[in-house]
Length: 235
Image (tube, rainbow, N blue to C red):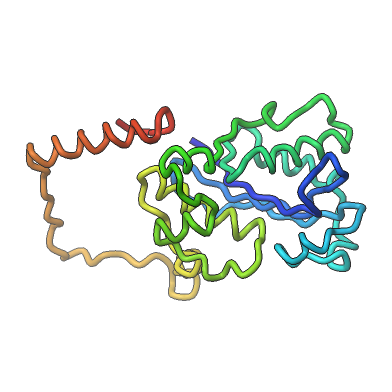
C-alpha cells in the first residue's frame, strides 16, 4: 500500500482569485512505514505573494524569483504521486489548487483524481473527535507528537508531521520523531554499517496473549472499525 502525504503552500486562499501554489512537499509511506523518499519543490507563481500568506509560511517574493514554474515540475510531480493514495489535511484546499495548476499548465482535461485517490485527514479527525479542534497543531497535541519545529508552516515539514498524526489516528505506532528520524537515517554511515546482535544472546521470550486479552483486543478493534470505517486496514 503506497501512500503519499502531501501539503502545499500558496500565495493566498483562493485559486479563483488568481492565487497559485508556491511550494509542494510530499513524503512516501509504504505499508505504513515512511521510506525516506520525498518530493519537495518551490515554485515561481508569476504573481505576488499576499502579505498575510507570508506571515503564515515566511516564503517571500524575492526567494521565489528564480524558482521553476509549475509546468517545469509537473511531470516529475505526477510521476511521484501517480497510483498512490494521497493523504492531505483539508484536502479540498490542496486538491483545488493542484487542479487549477494542472489547468493552467495545459492539462485542463486532467485532474488529480485521474492519478491518485485522496484521503482527507481533517474529515477523519472530525469523525473521530467531533466538536473538538482538529487542525494539525491540535492533533499533534492530542496525539503527543512533537511539532516544536513548526514556527512557520512549510509543506515538507507539515507533510512529515501529518504522516505521524495519520499513523497515530489510525491506530498504528508512529514512526519516529523528526529528530530521531534524522538520527535513524544517518545511523550506520560512520560506524561501519549495521549494528548486529551478538550470536550468543539468549533467545527472546515470547508472551502469548490470554483468551481474555484476545477477547478485549477483538472488542477494541470493533470499536476502532466503528470510528475509522473502511479505512481500518486490519480487523
